[in-house]
Length: 112
Image (cartoon, rainbow, N blue to C red; front, side, top):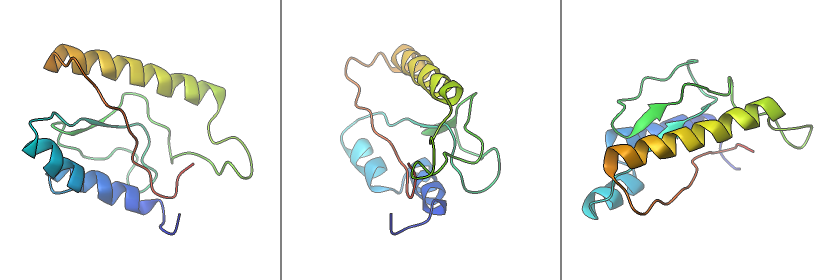
């Protein structure tokens, strides 16, 4: 990426504040937007999200992922934990919103 990992935190801040492009599109189309922070590399070990849009996962990859050009981006244990977070957060989201359709994506600048 042409941008450092620190940009990821700024993107999540925009999503959390409702000013990012995805936030505006979601609001104007009556779509619930949910972003789960599983390890934003920049800043504090625990980010302060509102919980309305962006939430911190119980398990977070401390310091972000490693450079996959020099080794594994995640350990097997970290990968397993991230997958478990995804399953649990999906169940919670469906329970909270009664969603019948979900679209998944990721936010990461300069990540692996």
